[in-house]
Image 1 (tube, rainbow, N blue to C red):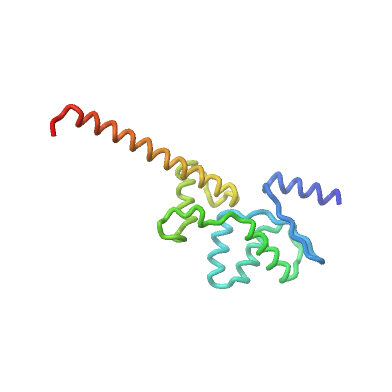
Image 2: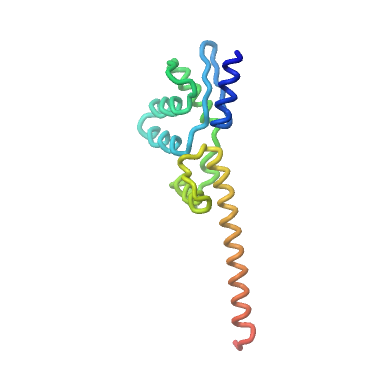
Amino acid sequence: MKGTEEKIREWKAVHGEILKVQSEEELAFLKKPSVKEIEQYNQLKEEDTYQALEFLFYKCVLEENKSYEDEFVLSATKSLIEQLPNANDSVLSKESGVDGIKKSAALVRHFFHVDPYELSIDEFYKLVGEALWLQEHKNKQLEVALANVLVKTFANGTF
């Protein structure tokens, strides 16, 4: 068991949180997917849900070259998806669900100068929250500046 514990520590150092999924016969350790992997999963899901789930499982499973039963792959991937943040919490459009990840990615790229598609999903949503706060803060600063300009412009004039 010591070898497994060492592997888990190494995986955590590289990937952060690790999900352990176990059935009576099988065991798998999964990392959380990147934003790019989630986007690919969402595209595949539109055409073939099974293929999308299988794709995501094999992108996230940490033990390579090991075969898993189909039923386990589906169950493990569904467990993984349940652990992910909800993309709808960060949708920027008034229209719910329209290009939410792309719009959020644009904010992250703008404020933090990183490729959001290479981030883990947890890091991505953390930065989305910070970017939304920064945008709101900038808007408030602009509002105060405009108010000051208007007061100085029209304070001494006649109406």
